[in-house]
Length: 238
Image (cartoon, rainbow, N blue to C red; front, side, top):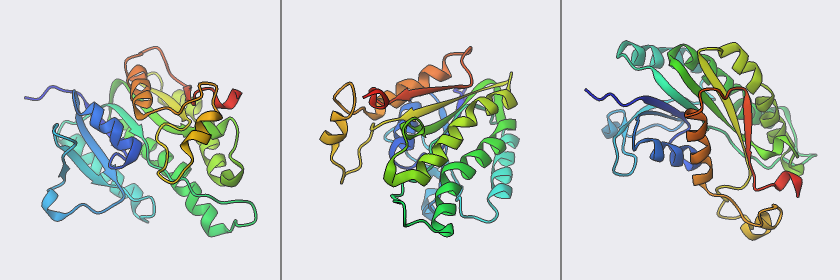
């Protein structure tokens, strides 16, 4: 019988979520969620590199039946004896929305994916942790210094960050909660990475490995909860 602990990575099929899932696959069983339909031939699993296949759940923030779907999926996993040692909620979007372009629909979409969806996922996951497990949230260094052309996104991440200590209190003492306020650790292909690097004290951008180390640090630190780790190379101080 496979005795490896279980993790779930919400938004674990792309970008940083996938990078963390790839790393965790070395020594954990995995469930990953995606908003995209999986091909029928996948059989509900996906290969992460050459490592153990991960169970796939489809959780779409725009689904009007999202909460019942979450509850049903997690109840099924629970019936199989699966309880999570850790969870990373990595789902989100990064829409450019300069002042003057705002409208109710676009604001609602930004806040739904970057604030409402992570909170609903955290609520659904809470009963399904092992004692001593950790829930971790991906945030952004924008919660310290909002990005002028991304104010709605910055506001959503700041609100989610403000809830980290509250969630830690709500889930204590059984589950620990932490957040990761990220700078540029995985630059978009069309961005000026050199310019962004010059805006940090370290004069360089980070990498997904910086987040991976931080996730494992929180997972392995049983006396840390309610905290936000900032991984931005000192950008907020520059």
